[in-house]
Length: 195
Image 1 (cartoon, rainbow, N blue to C red):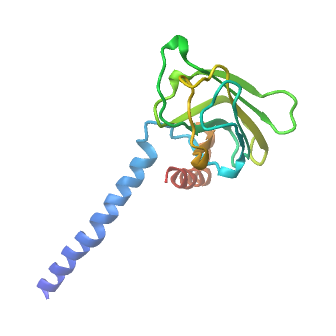
Image 2 (image 1 turned 30 degrees about the vertical axis):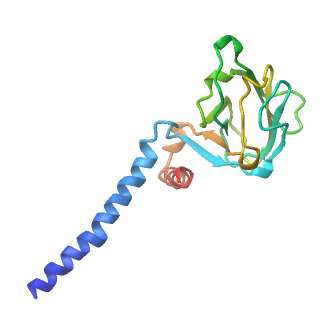
């Protein structure tokens, strides 16, 4: 009888407990140890059909990426786009990308920022940040990224066929910890977002 209990205990530990602990460690690590994005930021992947226009894969002077999306949460503060590898130029020869965002129907842009193309890291996601729109959930936003000086040697590239992009929502810490229910809902959303 003791031998059967010992075999059962060994199988339970090796097939049940150890895998459970490893998955739990992985889950907690993915939530708290991701150094690329703050814990209080939720990301939602944008769909390909929300990008309304891409002039060409290489963003040449005057070319634009134009998108429109419905905010999935409050506290919208990021639009993140993935750019392909490109040949970096000297600082003086870099392209300048203009990012603009507004709520659909507004006459004026909510925010306009300029970025030197040298800030983009090869084949990575680049965050275009703007002041947080606190009451953004359910509202439709339009954005565009325009090249001011792009040419065949200094332009950045995107993959038109498989454009990867996200929206980011920066929740205030006070709201996340305001109640157990709110904290639990945020953790569930964060875990879905992190996967």
